[in-house]
Length: 244
Image (tube, helix red, strand yellow):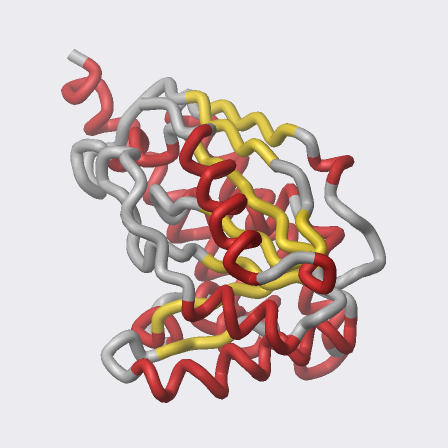
């Protein structure tokens, strides 16, 4: 029954989703080219605010726990499991004070209104997953960027979205580079639950009535811990918080 009801609701949802992306593309361009970084960031924040509000049509509710536990005025490396594109929308809005920048696949850097523009111009980095050597200097540059400006990087070490919420094996290379070149940063694990249920039928129709939860775990100072311990504690915190 849910799937049947979702067809007309999903059509309406995608209409507004596409409209928001198209409207904000020129807004982003003007903000970035005329007014600079801060204006562009504000436009991206409110783009994602509206995308988040649009999920109300799907009966989606979002809870973001323990935001106050995130260290302030220092570089932050957010590490999370990955379940759907809604992870990114929620992180950009709820963690907007930390200026989150993403390690994203190169394919997303073109062809998507607003999204591709932000990835290319907003401080995030694009990597070719088929060319690991290319990724090293790119992620290194992001590390140096967050170290210099005290902003944050977001990395999904599973490498791809989980279609059923079950965690995939964590890759360590990207996180290791971020830690190496942002020595004053804190690694902050985040567990994401239930965002996969929005796309449990695929991209159409969409799942209805889901409650997404984002749980922030204890921050780990890069300079005080060996990387192996950071990786182990981060993965354990994230995986133990996943509920299926």
